[in-house]
Amino acid sequence: MLVHDPAEPVNRVVFGFNRVLDTVLLKPLATAYGWLPEPVNDGVRNVVNNLGEPEVFINDVLQGNGRRSANTLGRFVVNSTVGLLGLFDVASHWHMPYHDADMGQTLGVWGVGNGPIVELPLFGSSNSRDAAGRVIGLFLDPFGGTDSDTVKDIKTGKRVAGAVDGRYRALPLTEHLEKSPDYYRALRDAIAQRRAGRVQQGRAGEVRPETPAAPETAPQPPL
Image (cartoon, rainbow, N blue to C red; front, top):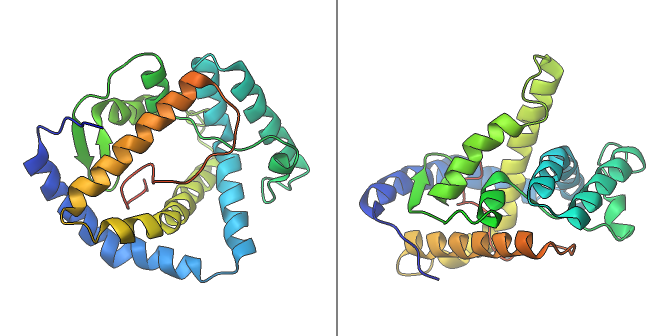
């Protein structure tokens, strides 16, 4: 697919910064994380996914996806109880597969165009619609208005664990793309294609397991 990247020279500078940060910090953490037993990795991912279900549910509703919103709500209830606060993904075994949803996808479902590519410090490659979605999503955070230190600690832990787990899952793809003649463009295009597919999934409203074919962000998932 074609991407609009008019600020490519500036984006490449930011990409260089992100890549250094990834090389010295996030990638080593993700590699070490991968050495942990698989049940530990699965448990971390399950908890992170479960903590994110309220946001997914809000976006499912905003997209008008009745089936997906019901599926998300069911997952949250089942995994928060039977799954021991999300440690175990019981819902998937009960035919309620996990899917993600965010405000950038919601804007796409509403018909907002991709806009130009922007490389964000720490967050990586994005289009302007998804970047705006990140900001709007802050105001839709169901726990955003609380002053509870416990909730803040949980949210911080979710972001850190999600970043490391996301980077770990992206390792095979990024290691492959790093061999391309132009890593910046290869990664940018892979992310753009993945995000376009995510919008199409939202429009279709299907409830099916997601395939981790490409990362949602650059190798620096949001911290």
